[in-house]
Image 1 (tube, rainbow, N blue to C red):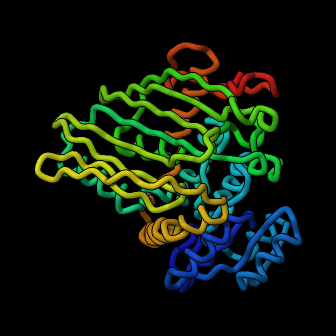
Image 2 (image 1 turned 60 degrees about the vertical axis):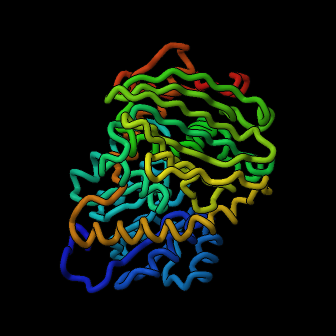
Length: 377
């Protein structure tokens, strides 16, 4: 229920802000929940809002934020470009409305901090979409950590090896710039796996990193390739390798090794496909998935469609959290933690020195225009 009227409405009233491709996943996910109604949608483009409303049977389509909130929504999903998130989340908090926001939470740490603080002060729930946590393969790794199978995690590895063609960047004007995308492969694609890595290994204490733009430099000013080494507060180490310069892409992977010597991991291949536990090197239960055939890259609509069931699982959990008055499975603080680490990685690229997430400060992500070799400045 809303923070304003916790017991007066028989069903949660939901609004969708931003009517692009991913918003369809949200509508379908909410509609799969009992006692939930999607009552309004908002987009800066009136025609797109109206078309989205007609497609999904939503009663109200608007371009006006106050008009949108006047429809007594209890929950909103924010599905807009990254730099707009803060304004919309703060508006939702001011209206006493719970918020589920697409990743990344913001393009800089201070913005995300303001969002988390505003929702906390307003007494509303803030969740961030990291739907890959709901894969059974991802949950199985979390359980192996919780039940002691791995002991203490000592090593984490992430590979995000993807293909993006020129049209991916040129067809959407806000992609590939520091001001509107907030970063390159790390911010837009690898952040999902950074979230998984920190879910498994905890907070990051120190990072070293390098980045460049090898393939897409004519079309973007952000990095298309990045490598980072991470030291965690529990003493574990990690490595993250990410690129959109591959043809074809080779998928996404995370693996964790524990103090028992056991290693477990998952593989998402092709991109958007439900991950499998490709490595389960646990004494007495060892398994290694056979090599997979090289497969064609999926297009973005296919990737979004394949992830839709896991949007549904996360949104179902978020709805339950709102009704029970508890924190959701992925909180605003979780998303802020990933963003702080991401900002430290970019700071390390910029400085050429190790950087700490808690020492990057409000100007952790400073940007220049094209010609910087993909590195944040």
